[in-house]
Amino acid sequence: MSRAGMWIKMAATLVVFSVGGPALIYYVQPTDEELFKKYNPELQKRSLENREQRQQDFDNFVNKLKGYSKSDKPSNWTVLILRPSADKIAVWEVAAADEAHTKANALEEQKRQAAEIEKRRDEIKRLSMSGK
Image (cartoon, rainbow, N blue to C red; front, side, top):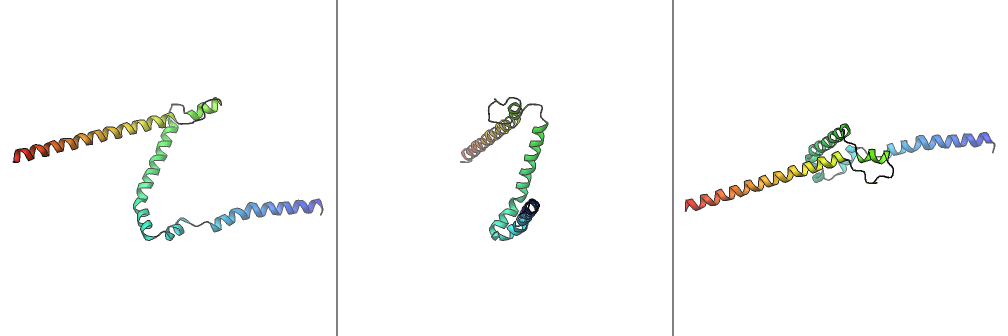
């Protein structure tokens, strides 16, 4: 086979694989609607009920990422890029601080609710004692 024939064959193979592969994947891959129709009715119902919450969680996640990217505090990624010998664990300091703040708020809320429940119990005890 001549050199020109070999190059033509290689170019044709490249085109077939470059265009045909993604086209095959696009043709075979089911759409979201097709997957949803394959769910059993209970899963469809649960998926519809939780859709809004999942969308809200995703929006919050994206907004937090946008906020973290605007932060003045350097992340460990920056340290890792500037100093390759830095620790390989890359965790955003801002995200860690935000997570700690969120946990602290949740803990305060739990303590407040526990105190409120205890207050209600004491009130119920007091009313039951005075009613006898």
